[in-house]
Image (cartoon, rainbow, N blue to C red; front, side):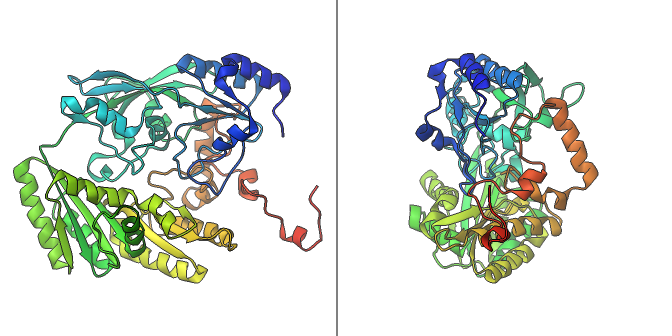
Length: 484
């Protein structure tokens, strides 16, 4: 369906032709986010220069009943920024200023297009940093982090984006510009900041964020440990937490993930080992030293076959470079892959990884695992070849893994979001009443249903027709029916 010419003209007029992209070749660059299996080419992309321009664009969409999708860096992995064919994309790429740094109160005010890592770079001279660190922190933007409530490797100790955002200036779906939250974490009245944060772009568009900053730790200790099995590595994680130690991070990678990462960045991981753990402690020197000794003893007690302690900032950076390269590096060992994002209780890590391996074998597909072991946030990567006709099997396996996490007492997503990818699995986790309440909240913010439609909550259209490449119905393939 094409965008109505009158509505199109009104939306273009809200910004001006220099801030509008409508060339079909150029708009194709916006047809998907990091979940490349689903693609929809938008007819128009708007690139406003400030918050007021975002508000004007949204007002024009609201007046003309045109759906819109906000887009940051496009690094999301759940199809959350998938465009609507008869709607527009509003890119926040130009809103990338650090507006204020307040070291005394440990706050910074930034626009949504600022990357996660740029916040830390802007405040490092004051001995401060921004704690959440998604693997894509060099390129993902804080606006996207707010939309998805992103976490990262250090969320075990420091929490997710919601724990580090004090307030947000947002454009509501009718174009009104409001502020949610305030200068302190606790505000009187309903927690609208908390409702909005993590809503995956379905309640409005963030245009300014006030974030909390932390003091740079006195010391950081990092180790890389190999184990003869995933089960033994998982027991180490449980024992560390049981000992009362709260590491800054505990990450696990399996054979396939290690192979891919080493081929890409040569970080010093042991190729062929069944499992590797990255454990990091930070804080006061004496406490770190004492706890680090305990962690080494726990690793040894569970058959650690190699323990490498980072002896310099460069070695620490190399260890993290290997872990954070894993997602992209998998492209070296597979032409295509889906990244899943489920959560299970820590005590069931070995069980769920065994089940995933069995499901992969049954589907005839490989699954690489790299994840935040400390809080049970799995990131199974389902490897497949679209050219070999494996896409549908890979999609089914990826969805089944997410639903397995729910079956084992976990959730569909830890940080990547539900988006388009897992909307149809929401009834596996929530009952009809729960989903109805979520819809009522969404309707309160967006009664016209034009703000990032078709995401998060299941709809008959979404669950009956998968977006992306057209797949003929079996009756069409057999000649019983025809496509009009």
